[in-house]
Length: 482
Ligand code: PLP
Figure 1 (tube, rainbow, N blue to C red):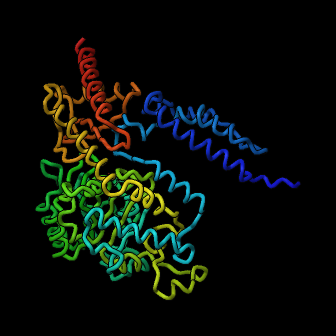
Figure 2 (figure 1 turned 90 degrees about the vertical axis):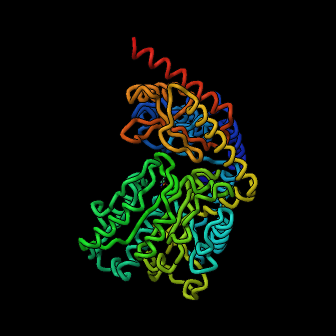
Figure 3 (figure 1 turned 120 degrees about the vertical axis):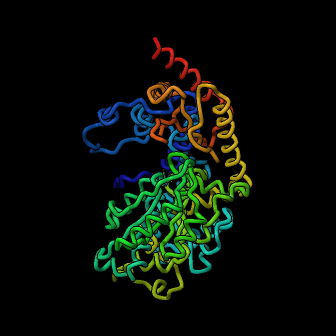
C-alpha cells in the first residue's frame, strides 16, 4: 500500500489519550516538582534542538520525550499555584477541551459564510457575557453595538483607536493618511499597548498625552480636562481617551464616570481597558468596576487573564459597531458572497486586524457552561479573599508596607529598607523556584507585586509564599548588614 505519511486515526486516538494523560500528570508535577520560573539560560533550549528538521517522519513518543527533556526545563509554569507574577493567565480543563475541539474542527471563521456556527456562537456568547458582567446593554449585538473576540487587549485597543480615528476624520484617514493633528490620552499608568497602538495607527507617539495620576495611581480627570483644553487651544484635535480599570502596575481604577462625561461632552471616543480586573464584575460586590461604562464607546477585558480561558481570548465591545466595521471593512472580489451582500450576517473579519480567525468562542462557551456563573464567581471571590489575606499580613508586618490600594487580587508592597533590599528579595525568591513574583516602580520606588489568580492557588500556597518572603527578607538583610 502506498504510504500517505499521515498519522492514522488509531494512532491519533492513542496519542491524544497519551497527551491528555501527560497534561494531567503535568498538573501534579508543576505543583510539586518543577521550578515555577524556568532556570534556562539564553540559547540553552535551542542548543539542544537538532540543527536540521528530520527527513523521515519521527514517532510521537520521540516528540513527547523531547517535550519532557528539552522543552520542560525552558517552561515557566504559568499554571503553577505558586505563580504570583505579572497577571494570571489562568486556564482550565473545559477551556483546554474547547481549544482541542477548535483545532479538531480546524475552522477558519473570517466570514459568517465560512462557518456560520463560528460567528453565531461568538455573537451569542459575547451577549451572554454582557449579562454576566452586567455591562451596559449598548454593548449587546441586538442593538447598534456588539462584541467580538480579539486575540489580545492590545488588538482591542488598536481597533478602538482606529475606529475613533476614522470617526473623528469622517472616515477619510484610511484613504488619505493622517492629515489632522490628532491627539490621544491615557494615564501615565496605562498599559504600553496604548502607546504601541498610537504608533501603529500613525498618530505618533508624541501625540499621546500621558495624564498625571493621583495618590491611588488613578488618572486625574481634572488634569485630563486641562490637557484637552490646552491642546485645543494649540490647534490639536483630541479624539481618543483610554481609561484603565485595573492598571497593570497596581490595579488602579481610573475615574471612568468623570472621564466619560468629559469625553461625551467633547465628542471624544472613550475606550476602557479592564484587561484583568474586568472579570471581577462577575460578582455583584465588584460591579463598582463598571461605573461610568455606559458612556464608553468601547470596552475590553481578557477572559485569558482571570476567567479560566486559556490564551488567547479578549472580549472587545463597541457601542456603535458601524464605526468599527466601516473603519476595518474591506471586500475584495474573492470574499464576496450572498450572505455578506444580504446584510443579515456578521462578518467578524471586519471587526479585527487580520482576515482569518480561529473558533475561539468554543473555549469560552465550554468554560461558561462548565462552571456556570456560580462557579466562576466562587473562584474569583476566593482569589480576591486570598489577596486580601496577604494584604492583611503585609499591613500587620513591621518590615513591609503596602505601596498602593489593593482593591482586588493584586497587592503591591515593599520592604521598608529600600530598593536594594527589595531587588535582592525578589531575585532570591525567584531563583528559589518555589514561587514567582514580579515588580513595578511606584512613586519612584522599587515595588513587589503579588497577584493571585491561578486556577489552583489556595490559602496554603499564599501562606507559604508569605512565609518564604519574610524568611528571604531576613536572610537578605542579614547578608547586607554583614
Ligand atoms: N491592558 C492591561 C491593563 C494589561 O494589564 C495588559 C496585560 O498586562 C494588557 C492591556 C495587554 O494584554 P494583552 O496581552 O491581551 O494584549
